[in-house]
Image 1 (cartoon, one colour):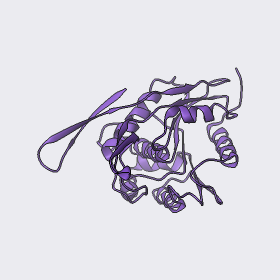
Image 2 (cartoon, helix red, strand yellow):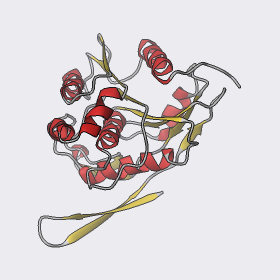
Image 3 (tube, helix red, strand yellow):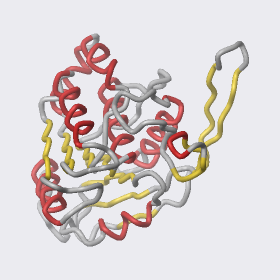
Length: 257
């Protein structure tokens, strides 16, 4: 699937980029379908890697949709192309934000969720850069629009970020404070953030600062979990917490029919 977007450059000329998303992998619910979650992989990865992990989790009521990011030049790799949800030159919440890429990926996520049945709860989550994109999608939901001003079309019930960071954190609080509706949504949206203290790719401090930025912006239903010594990967303890949190926040009953 492709997504076309245009942006005004430093002069008067318009530039257009087309983002070609890769293959999407779907893990069907083993029991009664109650929730659909789009799960986003990390930089340089693909959707199939996480679909294999998510398929093993004891969450029979969740349908997982695992898309693959576009292959694109990435500044942090000196312009070398790899799968990436947006361009990034420095992995932190203080880095310049590629709004065009973020909007394209958040739109792709929303499009994947928009065809789900009306009685199904919707969520988004991810790992590393995927977590950053999931959190950006959460802010679009809260504000009711993408960074480019287009309306955000889906209602999110849960957001999960593992070993990630929050893009556009510098302006989030002021944006939410301008809207009572955004403040109400922020206060009620369940978010789980998990981060390892030994992460040498996305440092723990970036995850911690992202949690603080969300909290100060009015996200009251926020859980932040630190894992001592954990690097840039997942462990069973983290995945157990992940499963328990989703079950509680989404009211999953484990039913099979």
